[in-house]
Length: 124
Image: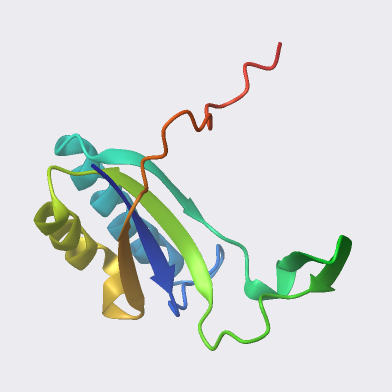
């Protein structure tokens, strides 16, 4: 089953920061452990919440707002998608994620929806 790890409230050093190489090494080691177990599907850090744009449609009208969803008190910093044997393995890997030491990792099963087509485009 696939699980998404959502990484919240984790400050990470930026490239050029003296702490960046060590932080990057920890993240790469985590991704490598997920690959070794055959669980890694994808992982993506997100740019800061100040780069977010929120879209909603109400009564047929599109509302576009700069910034993240206004009612949230947490910021989403990145995601991993893991293909795990079960929830226990997903939770074990979430605990190994280096960002769990500074932030919070939400583990959520990915819903299987029949006939939903989310394959990458072929570019053709």
